[in-house]
Length: 463
Image 1 (cartoon, rainbow, N blue to C red):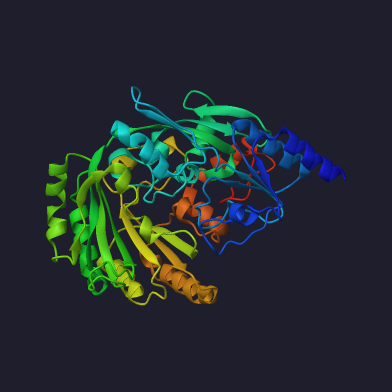
Image 2: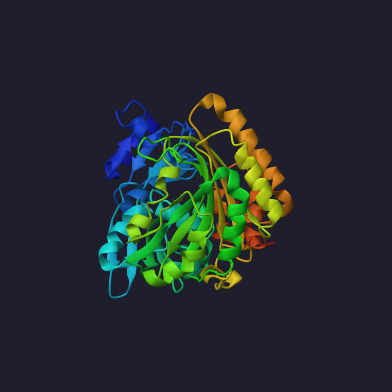
């Protein structure tokens, strides 16, 4: 009875929507990007304002409920939902405010990067969002923020100017370089460990029209194509953010037969600068082969933000493994091509990213909690499948691939690409020597580890 009265009191103070098992919208509200995640929370608090977030935090703390925080639910590990606890759902918080004169954009935590790109496009501006439009602003930024503008403008967190945060004790405060700078340092890379960020203020950049797209080569030529991309990428200007992607084309009747359902390697990305300069910068890449198809074109940046969406649709089962690479040697490329030739699912995508000699490496290592800026390449294996009977096979292939890449791997990882089963080794790889400072700040801002359903950093006071 007391517990029920407590819930009723919470509902009376909460201006958003409370969803519980049995409600018509319950299953939709607990669904996340990765269909392999099937958790059943006791309550889902769909917040409409900052005060709702604070009320939800206070209620969960008093009721001793585990808490999951959901922005868009895009993280493959499924941290956005929990069993037998409270999901604090920020999805209804969608306000976006553009300050054209200051070139900033304030974004609430329920937004994805496609929505931010759409809000900025009429002003000829763009923010350093992710590679896929449905990626949540909050999760991407707090863990790092790789995206199509990273080589020119750095990570999303490098462009973060301020954040509004609700702490574990229910307090609401601002974190910036001037206010609570230690919290601001921790938020930029430390994930959701320190509080719930309800809004972000980012610097925006001129990027109205960009040259964007991909050239496609047969999967059988993957090794040679990636080597060519690697050698050309080493000479690319900062305006160019390019990657190598190994995937299967959709089995779409509208595609030419030579592409329909075929394994391919795509070499593509975005040139954020004058189109004629981009044409010159990408000429050698586009002429190599020649490719099966050349899909580069001038387009609004908000369209470029969506061009890779088809490769990562929601509703599939997923398991990811990732590592930074010491270098992209011929031997490492051969391993990548070999495993792609034996991939068990046509929905799996392998991505190799390059960030050397770019804006992201201009930031001093000590400036943010994000580390690992010294490594020029990152590889992420985004395994995906639909049939639950295929889970063991796909997970085993992914783990074997990851193990085979270890001779070429750096002792480093990108926290946003982790699959959720890395444990303490994953945290060490993500943060290195910064982990100790993060643990001390965790003890300051969340001493009881209230926010623990994440890539969790346990609180540790200095001895």
